[in-house]
Structure formats: structure tokens, C-alpha cells
View: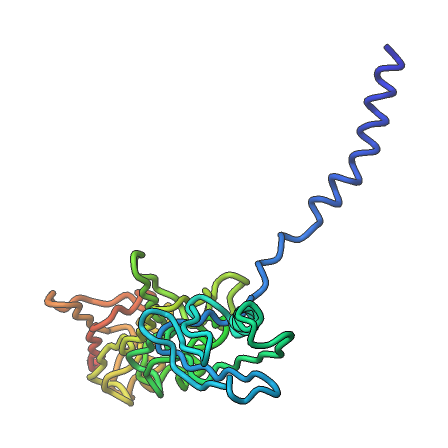
Length: 265
């Protein structure tokens, strides 16, 4: 009996550091980026060193092929520049044209893998995914969110529900809060949510709603009440509803109208 207990105790002591080490190991790294996958309308330049008759600058056709001198059609779609160069070299050898060709392929135009950026950004448009991009990186390429843009962005992806991403989370959030983009994705930045404030306030008008903004903060944003105003006498109209007395800690919603009442002397 003592022998059995000693065996299991020894096994536990031996395996404990192994288990702890396994728990301490980080998650397996994502598969390394293999390179841009070519597709129709991408343009490529093929260079066969020392054999200029084989050099070609061309666009990939709708069927995913390019045409090379002597060897004819070569399937380029789905290949990277490295794998396409290897494929062409193998075809040149197999056809008996060259013994040990040195082939290089450069991508001249990235067209087949793109994302769309629309809405309230400085430079909306179509952006090529010439390498892996996160949402934040593409927003930066698009000149960032304009001052009249919302503090969130919609990510639209075929076959999936629209995803709302907070801009602050993209910038300061934990790992994984900034998604990787896929070809065909669309980023849409809507106009900023706003409220209207008037009455006995120093800076009336339309204001942008900041995250978590309360009535009290909205009054401060609008410069505070005038000498004849009363900060604790505030009306609120929401939607098509009637005016109600606003609680200073109440959260502002898009389209709210805040009325600062006059002090009664």
C-alpha cells in the first residue's frame, strides 16, 4: 500500500511542472502570412533572367490565367508571386525551353482582393488588401474618421450579421478587438449621433453625443447655463414624446432635445 502511494505521489510531483509549463505556453501562433493570393484583373510582371523573350507584363484574365510565350496559358489565380514564379520555371523546364531558369514575379496591381470604406471618413474608397490589414489600419489609410463621424463603425461581411465596432476599442482595446479584414468587406462610418440644446445655455445648437454622455455633461459641453438659467430645471423631448423633466444623470440619446429653463426670480 505504501509503495502504491509513493508511486502516485512521485508521478504527481513529476507531472506537475510539466502541466504548469503547458498552461504557461502561449496559444499557438496564427499561420504565417504566405503572401498575396492573385486573382482576376491583378497585373503581374514576369522576368526570366537572361532570357528576355520570356518576359511578360500582363493582367490576369477573368478565367484566372496569364499567357506566356511558348508555354501558353498558366493558371495564376490563387498563386502567390513566389509560387507562380516556381510554376512558370517548372513549365519552362518541362517544355525543354530552359534547363535551370531563374524566374521572378512582381505584382504590379492589386485589384482582386479589396475592401470598401464608405461614410464619414476623410478619404472613402476601395482599398487593396496587398497584405493582411486590420480595421484600424484601413481606417488610417482612409484618412481616419471625420469630426462629424460616429464613434463606431459597421463591418459588413457577406453571409454574416453586420458588426458594430467601437472606435475606442479598435485603438485601445485588448488583443482581438480589432478584426482582420477579408476581401469584399465593407466598413461604413455613419454620421455622429447628435442632440439639440437650447434655452438659457451659453452655446446652444446641435452637439455630438460623446460615449456615455449624461444630461449634466451635455450642459457642460454647451458651455453651461446662463446667469438667468437654472441647471436643475431642464426639459427633455425624446422622439415624438412630450417634454419631461430631465434627470441630470440621464443618458443622452440620438435626436434628444434639451431645453434649459429660465430661472424664476
